[in-house]
Image (cartoon, rainbow, N blue to C red; front, side, top):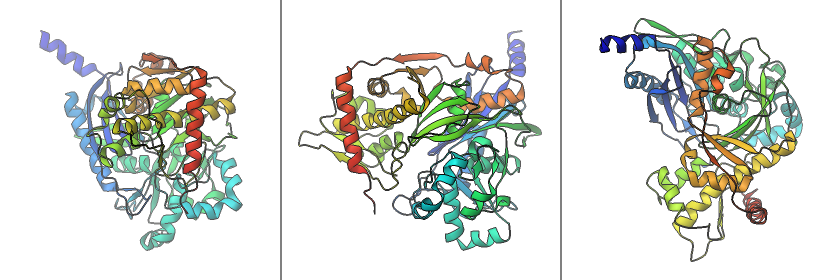
Amino acid sequence: MFLNFLRVNIIVMKAILAIDQGTTSTRSIIFDENSNVLGASQIEHRQIFPKEAWVEHDPLEIKQNVFKTMKEAVANAGISWDQIHGIGITNQRETVVAWNPENGIPYHNAIVWQCRRSADIVDALKPDYKELFHRKTGLILDAYFSGTKIKWMTENNEKIKDAVINRKIIFGTIDSWVIYNLTGELKTDVSNASRTLLMDLTTNDWSEDLADILGVPVDTLPEIIPSGLGEGFGEFKIQGTSIPVNGVAGDQQAALFGQGSYYAGENKCTYGTGNFALLNTGNDIKYSSNGLLTTVAWKLGNEPTKYALEGSVFITGAAVQWLRDGLKIISSSSEVEDLASKVDNNGGIIIVPAFAGLGAPYWDQKARGIIIGITRGTTDAHIARAVLESIAHQTTDLYEVMRQDAGLSFDNIKVDGGATKNKLLLQIQADLVDATIIRPKNIETTALGAAFLSGLSSGVWSNLNELKDLNPPEMTFWPKIDEEERIKQRNKWKKAVKRSMGWED
């Protein structure tokens, strides 16, 4: 009787599979209708550095890891494929793949969002087109975005040049690459498309003018559709089952969605390889005068597009990885909190981890990392603490200008991402930004947001208010230092940032 009861519950359970294809790894997570994790799998992929400040990924390795983690997550959840009601995808944005849609073979390694190889292209475009790109896309002309990476490909790879002429090529961000390999469809969602320098914010479609400037034929780009509640991205077929792929958003937009920040004025900051703060501006396209980006948050079916202001920090969690892999003063990223806690302060040193230039609000692609203030008393613990402080300082930089642009105080900041397991980091963050830091029960909100988009489209959940209750707050951190100390630390940080800028010729 008990076994029969269990079997009935397994059959009626509604599961969603979320694929989180990130900068350093690919994860697949199975959620139930209560947002509980039933099973998961994660695999890291290689970071390829052909030259200084160049970063690539192998698209075929990513493809392989997507399929492997999907299968392992289903197995770990102990469910069958026919119990999965939908598949959601979230992904590292701006990273671009060029492949032959006839056979699925890439022409080049994926060029990663961190890669600076197109900096010279940006410098050449800025004098004539800086304002045009900002007005149409809400973005800054920078090597960070996909469009300049595509232009570099078309100018430096003969196979790609020929493929463009013969129209045997698709340029797509990672979501499109995953969608193609799951369903055969050539599609992207509006949030990812808004990160390419090629999409017009007002039309939510590719801009012929911008594509022409970047030398990218529009018919070599995937179709742009809503993030959820729309026509969908095709079906994944396995073991006689067809599962709709029906929720897609770039990683930061997905995190905003997973945090339940559905309405204008709500915000979140994700702590990952980089840090990304987003403020929901509702149906309004708001431009920043302080170096923030205007971006699409998501679009649900025929509803008006939701927009956001975004601040992007390139290197935060990656700086902790540098402590592990470069300096080798920790053996795993989780050890950084214990090491940093051995000292009460940074010993007078500041680290500016501008390994790939500086993002918002500085936008200096020629900045490079520095350690300043070293003495004979500097220890590995001081370095570890300074790295954590650099994460919090850079995030505070974003919220300072976001407060100015939005005219809001931001008494509360919702945080998520793997680094938010670090309580010392979150306390430092509360102190520097002078706001209450709220960590939710599920800090993997990027994958959760993708699951929510898919679950809405599949009928697992019926509305946004229902989703808000599925990821309540778990921990809160309040500021502890006084204003004088805060100003002192912030001024020293800004002084160090100035020293790092304009270093690379």
